[in-house]
Amino acid sequence: MNSFETNADPVQTSTESAKHQQQSDAILIKEYAAGDLEAFKTLYSRHKGGLYRYFLRHIADPNLAEDLYQEIWSKVIIQAKHYKPTAKFTTWLYTLAHNKLVDHIRHLTVVNKVMIDSHETEMTQEPVTAAQVQMLNEPENELAASRITAALNHCIGQLPQAQKDSFLLKEEAELSVKDIALVLNSSFEASKSRLRYAYENLRQCLQVKTGRAFL
Picture 1 (cartoon, rainbow, N blue to C red):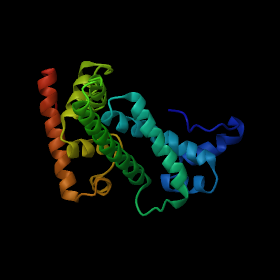
Picture 2: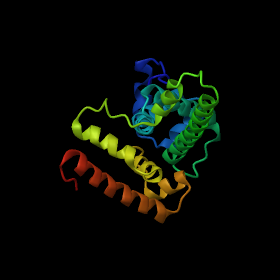
Picture 3: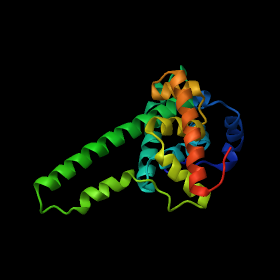
Picture 4: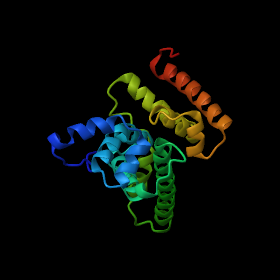
């Protein structure tokens, strides 16, 4: 996850780095658009963990999650000069990420349908091909570090898509309900309701999976 790390003289940039750490995202993206690479480095470092986890929670394949993650940072680089602080940078960033996921899922659905249809019309096609495509949508629990983490990964995967999107934007992006509504193009009340149901469903699922009660 370091394709966008910048190389700079540590002595020269130490003061600049300290300054950037105190700046808001909106100022950082503006300064980067004006040519300040250190501003982008700070912005990237600030959001890379949450954004990558956001993709990894949706995509079972870490390599594919990494590819989509890198594409979003490429979009940030390209669109930095056009960014307008009408919404928080985090909201803008995760809107790009959500749209990329929607495009990916739509593309995957089309590919899956084409490959299955092709298999049905051409019996000579290897049946494993369609199965390999479908595997991209399956929950990934095997890499979890603990039983509870594995259970949480599983339970997140079982959430209805709208609840899952709302939950991950809340927990990974730390967005407010208002900002979640903007990203998902829904009402404040709908987003609030989805979050409430998401947390309740996760509590119930975790209790079943682990045998423990969660507040």
